[in-house]
Amino acid sequence: MKAEEANLKDGGDCVIMGGGPAGLTAAFELEKFGGKSITLEAESDVGGISKTCEYKGYRFDLGGHRFFSKVEYVKELWLEILGDEFLKRPRLSRIHYRGHMFDYPLRPANALFGLGPFEAVRILFSYAKAQLTPHKQEDNFEQWVSNRFGKRLYQIFFKTYTEKVWGIPCSELSAQWAAQRIKNLDLKRAVLNAFFGERGEGNQKVTTLIEVFHYPRYGPGQMWQSCTSKLREKGHQVHLNSRVTKINHNGEAVTSVTINGGTDTEQVVEGKQFLSTLPIKELFRIMDPAPPKEILEIASGLRYRDFMIVALIIEEEELFPDNWIYIHSADVTVGRVQNFKNWSPDMVPDQKNTALGMEYFLQAGDDLWNTADDELVAMARRECAQLKLANIDKIVDGTVIRVPKAYPVYSPTHGSEMARLREWLGKLDNLQLIGRNGQHHYNNQDHSMMTGVLAARNINGEANDIWSVNVDEEYHEEKRDLGGFPANKS
Image 1 (cartoon, helix red, strand yellow):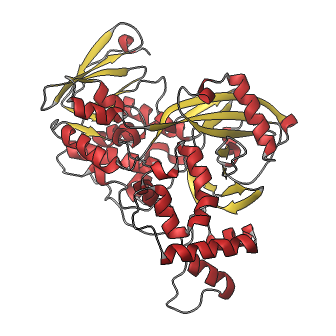
Image 2: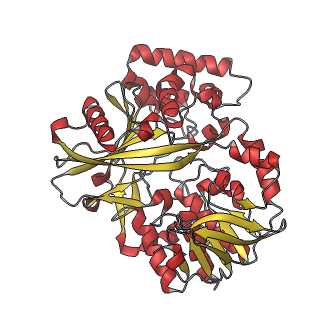
Image 3: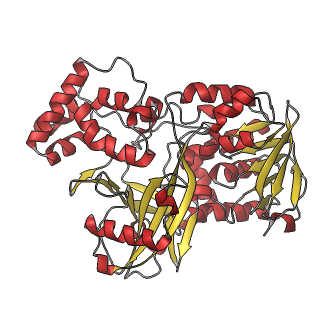
């Protein structure tokens, strides 16, 4: 439905810019308080980068979205939205390096012994050196990782893949990102345990990683399509093909937004409160009146990493047991491979076949991004065969999906830049920024959802700091009871 064809009404209690996990969760939470919302989604489907794409009956996830969370309320929401269509799936992911598979998340003993005795000794000496003479500063990713694991382990298991993902040297990537995303392994304890076992009551055991996760039967997009249906049934508006082209404000508050549905026709939607999941770079660009030049320069300098998946259909019933594999080899361009049948059997219409997602990290507009689809499929087929994941003669079809602004990049000055932008936005007391791109914060799906929940509760009179979500939490999913946000009892 085009925006100009929709019966757009007054935005009511809240206008939500973006129909991904954060925006739709905010609308779902507002409903619990009796508030009404209107959600404006620029694309033709909901879900953002958590949507599910389909090709000839084969479904593809944009990056692999496991549904696990340390926040109980998020898990309650997932079950409330999807119910019995939420499957429990076994978890397996590994690193492909030099033709061998290594555990992921990285287990030090597995890495040391898998690399062989000579390399293991080099790693241990490098680790010892890092403990004795660490970098005095930890401004960037390389320094942060090398201080904790040693330079050699950093070079083997972090450098190549990280630079493949982000397209910049690790020295230009913020240490803040490393602290958020990487589990702090204890090499010394891991080696002692490998040789002597875990002895003594005082010897703390390594926490067991989660071995199963939940996943919608037909991919993550099913969650957000179901959420949209429930919202519409309760009178909330969710409009597709409705791109926000202008955010109108008076210096103290946002008064309305202007949208365009792909024609010359524009419509203005007014509201009392506004939530934005738009990339911050875009948000500041469409502010009317425009922010000061200094603020616009900071916002325009924010960087993103784009994403492309080449989905391959393979005439093989089974290929490998992993849900996904990280590709650390510099000999191929692909960075990660998803095996969608291992996420859910229903992602594949014919159980005699398998569907793989060859994932590439790139910049929109570069040579790879602009390569013709048939050439990209041919490249993915070659690389899949080169990695010995499938026989090239069995790869019978493929398609290409491009995703701009998939990952916000943390520069070494990320903290100060965001502080300045947030300071200026603080003048607009009815605008809240939520979600991964909305906050330029590398949130997981559950964290993005919690920013939406807390923003909705702020509209209902609470005073939550939505910027604190996922700031102090570790990324890796250990089995721990962290409590979490209290469930909404209203």
